[in-house]
Length: 213
Image 1 (cartoon, rainbow, N blue to C red):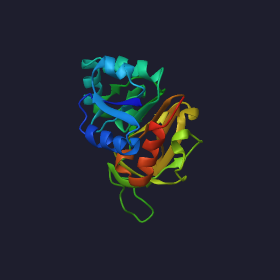
Image 2 (image 1 turned 90 degrees about the horizontal axis):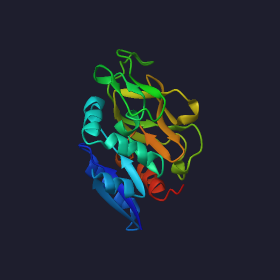
Image 3 (image 1 turned 90 degrees about the vertical axis):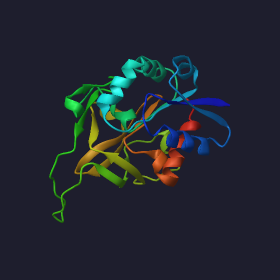
Image 4 (image 1 turned 135 degrees about the horizontal axis):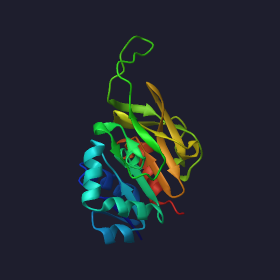
């Protein structure tokens, strides 16, 4: 039985992520929430969820020295980032007056452009909130059983711009075409919330708990 840790740094959606993981684990994997360095480093897989502002997220990570723990985990085990768990992997974010990220994936986080209108003359709302399609840029084990263009649930005002196209594994259209999933080696991260995305979201989480590298 593998041990999956949901990283606890003060985010408010930990329970829903853990609950969804427990559902797809079907008793074959142990799911725990922890901020203890040793427990996280000894886990078989790590999930880094998050919602809210990146400034507070990065401050909490650094206060608990979890930024270094994350960097070490990404070197050696399957790692899933969700929402801020994707954005914080970049070099820098424009949010909160400018905040440096973990620098694991080269790139930046930028805000959607305000007051853009769609073809019907309606102004796009920010944050982007609701269901939208994700177009798979390249095959990946976590896309198994999920059709290209499937819909997932989003809540965000900022999005990532990876420098390297090879890190992009999914994209979405809202005001512009942007990266909604990124992957490299044993790392996979999404802008959308799989734990809130019903069947396809649970399928992605199931693929993660069964992912071997």
